[in-house]
Figure 1: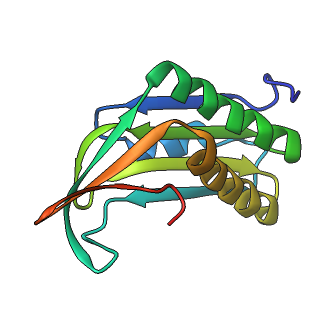
Figure 2 (figure 1 turned 120 degrees about the horizontal axis):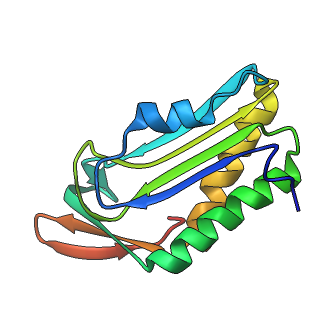
Length: 146
């Protein structure tokens, strides 16, 4: 297991708007030459249909546990990670709202890009947060990996 003191983690699951600047700031480190972030937002089209809004449902204790575990797995794969910050929304989100922010810092950019991609992809596979898209004519639960 990675040394937690070497790479502090910010893990958050919230029903409030995500403060993107705060998540990015949480990932900053004087030892890092790269801070990489993925910002997932609610888009207005999916599968050719107009999306009105999204609903994220979660089991918070397990979701937070799994979010932390994903960050720890990233630390095992990229021991050069300096900081990891992940914030995910649950509840109802409107078009344009920020649904998730993943930010990491590393000494060099290649590791930063790879670790950030790994975290968002793995998060979608293993964290119990479910997405339901609301269209003009109904709702559909959406698979994590369409």
